[in-house]
Length: 105
Image (cartoon, rainbow, N blue to C red; front, top):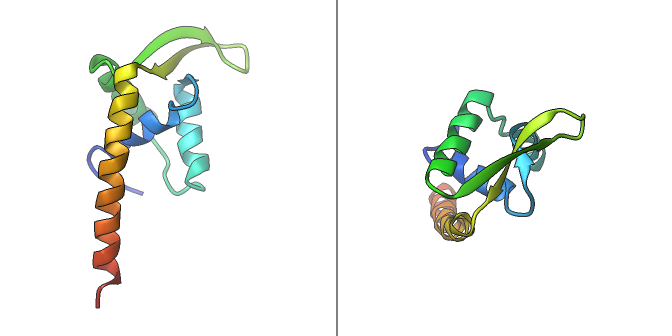
């Protein structure tokens, strides 16, 4: 499914809301949470993670993954939590408006 502009950033922020995750885990969380409807390509994911890090919304550090491999873990910053909350309000409003249009006769 093709994502609307800015949607990937919101999904990534939401994936990091409860815990730090490495990129593969972020993509898996999005895939699993959407029942496979949204599949995030590696390149797009890492571009988004780096963009969010450049904006100070996420920070990262090296760690070891579940399969004992070195991986970069990303977590929300305080600014990232505020951004996520604001984007969720905006997105819910947008989605409700689109749903009204789709229900109209």
